[in-house]
Length: 577
Image 1 (tube, helix red, strand yellow):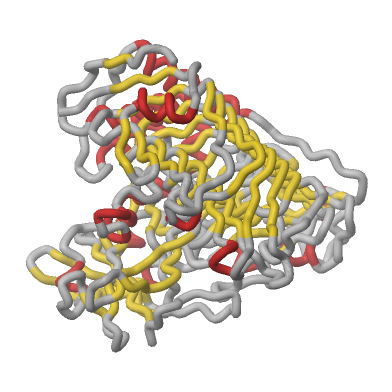
Image 2: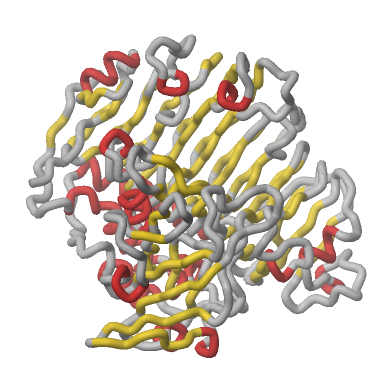
């Protein structure tokens, strides 16, 4: 291991952890394509220029300061990440397929035959109703946008759109990546918002219809956002604050650009696969006026999941945004032995996750909220995730959760997964794996075989809107670090047969940079058969927290890397005051 290097770069409190924003600003200045892609309006058109985006991004990040200077080592990382993103913006991913291509365009017609750009269909639902067969591919026109709720196959109570086995999804034409969105269709309409109360400059607005719980409202395509304030729950199903007082929106929304959703008939389990999502009243504090008049785009995530693909399928060149649970399921969660290859590459995934999934016991007289989801849910085998830009998702990013769905299956094995060359920015845990099989069935075990997390940039983990969510959810001291690390398995360690975490750049986090445990289901008497191999990574951390959490103990970089046998990684510490 190279000697740990200490750099004194910034002296203002917390600013060292915010170097990433210099990288974001630099890219925004030099790439109008990025501004266009991040600011799609309802019909997919660009709404702002990069200078406006830069100013707004730097102006509201939980009252923190941002600086553009850095020492040469860290600046090289940010320059490389900026170059990666510039290449990503220019890339036009192509799919290889053996069957029929079906074309879908915002200017198409569902009465056409869909077999050429000139005779494109208008909706994804029409393309899937053909139905396509293995080897076929559905191509969305670049520059277009589609809401899952408009597809005819899913609405706000749906779980996901299932793509048939062997059917792939890609893009054609010129312009930005086509957008598949899970946002409400009417969030940006002034008529959707009614003034609920106004006092001493505070204005709270009520949405005109019942809504599912969302953990973030995204404003102007990501220039800023509104933070969700989550109520607690009594055992009598009454909403309260953390201290047991009644939860009243006008008292709990103490800051501008905050919101809450009070679901009707709250229960301890809020969302399920039965398709009956709870809805309730959404209250949004926006002191400047009607949110849809103050902001040209108000995106409220409502659909829980985007799409799910099965074996011998690929997804390339698509943008997925605004889903409350996960954007994409790579393999059916209920089919654990999907052997055909699955590829997910050159896609954007943003502003996903944070679904309020349940209220849980915590040793007090009340129940606290628990959120779930993130960017990508993976299961099965033979999977490649590469060349994707994943940003502003939480509480997790790349999720491998082993479950048993067949009560006759004692060993559940996921294998041959490669997560490589992705840029992951301002998300919850960048790489998260957990084994829940023993909870699903007595005597069951999970196994991860030949898993590669390599050559990824994981920058600024646990930050952005995710930080506010985690601060409310992880209030217990022993869980305060969950989901804020670049790499973690804290929820449930798993036996492995080859896991390789190598060649990555893990740069800054709100908590520990690594959060690793040998204990299956947290039991020190039940340890994993082997540890993952850490090698050749570049670690950058602020020193505000210990470098890592290892078996529930804080450790420094030298101790962690020695324990894990990592002899060829580089560690850069950027101290803060």
